[in-house]
Length: 203
Image (cartoon, rainbow, N blue to C red; front, top):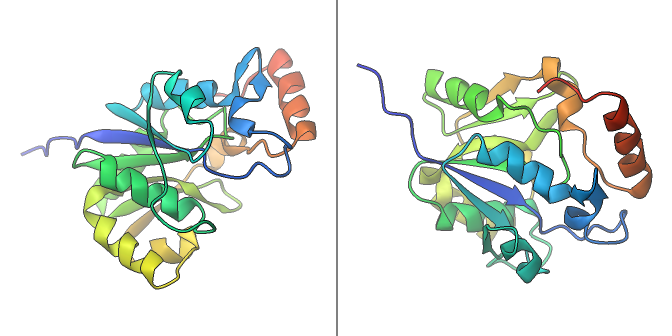
């Protein structure tokens, strides 16, 4: 008997300080649109609901038609605080976590992560681009929310270290490595814009 697919809530992490960009990178313009709009397009096609984790500019995020969650943990907790907030808010099922600064995410990200998670009956599945782990591109079940809260309470901050404490499958996305490129500063933004005018990586 085939198991029913879990409800998937996408969670876009947009709570970083954007120090290298010099402004809120979620809203820098890429191809005439805010960078986060490209990310939202990608995850809306792969999920049943969408949340954004942010601590500033909340009105601008809600204007994009998404619900916003804010960190309940002290400043400096990093992306795990955003993931914890998303797990608390999300409907029971799985949460597809992605960063706001990866505007070319694979169109099959959720499917491939979900297949790997299901195959191993794992708590989570995380992407690997063939060179390095992409720890904030993952699919995680809401049942691990208490585990994450405990990890944060004990001072844990690293996503990869937390993933090592739960059942996590690693998924090879070497064929989509370019899609995980993060845009962290103006030079990277301009480079991606130039490339997008020539061609976009396969999605």
